[in-house]
Amino acid sequence: TRCFVPWPPLLFITKRNKLILSLPFAVSVTPAQHKNMSCLQIIVMFLPALIVSFAFTTSALNSFWCESIQFTVNQDTDVDDSFAVESLHFGMWYQKRTRIVENAINPSYLEQQQSCEEWTTDADADGTLQAIRASSLITLIVGGLLAIILWFRPCLVDRISKRTWRAIAVVYMAFVTPMQALTFLLFQSNACTENPVVALIEHTLNREDLYETKCSWDQGSTANVFATFLWFSTGIAMIYVGEPLSPQRGPPEIQTVTYERTKMPDGTVSVNEVAVVKGTTVALPTKDV
Image 1 (cartoon, one colour):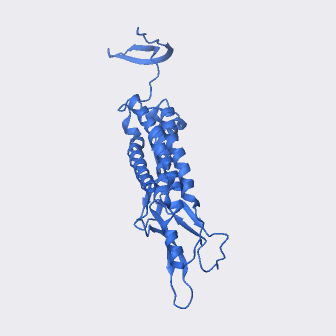
Image 2 (tube, rainbow, N blue to C red; image 1 turned 30 degrees about the vertical axis):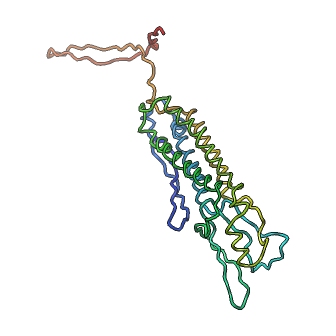
Image 3 (cartoon, helix red, strand yellow; image 1 turned 180 degrees about the horizontal axis):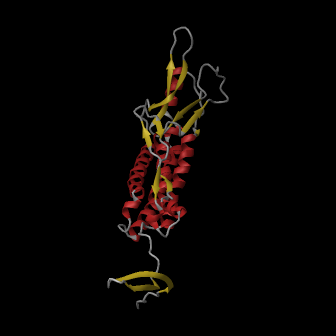
């Protein structure tokens, strides 16, 4: 029999900033290669790699998707439904493509497409937003590089010490996780409180207070919650599973083997094994510390 272990999903970001998530594939592991491990134990061995893959994916979604925060139409403003889109969506680096359609006869109106583009105006990015962007990149770089170790865990059997393994786990819990959590400061940056794109749209359309003055929660921020939780869970899983080690062999045993010796007519002797009786486990010698 073979155990099929789900392997990390892969994330692709196309030139148009569209996210494509490939399906996880399976790694076939023969339990005979790990004689003292069940299929469930083998799957648990790959648990940190699986968790860190989803952590990296959700972190990338939060960083490079264009729907982390949104500005909804101000409920106190009387606006024709055909004039403005219901909400404007933004991320740390990108915004949902929105353009102003100007018409010489009819009033100008907004048109939104289902794709992302870089911020149309980025000159007013404050220090908080710049720090958030740096934090998101550091999270992906550090977390992604360390994830390579987890993905290639089968190749590191007996090659990485317990101290190093636990140090990596601590980095995930004490560094990568807080760096990911810092990106929630997006709600305190001017991207949320004084968004220059929203201000430009309202100025161009000559409609003040068309949208709410402060942003609200969007889907990318939900991904951020999962990313923060999964980065921390990666460290916990590493400590729980432990560093990659060779499967432990069973203790030596004493066994009684009975042979039958037969002398043939031609003078040759034939020796055959008749029975094997397993005995008790041999106690290993203890060492004084």
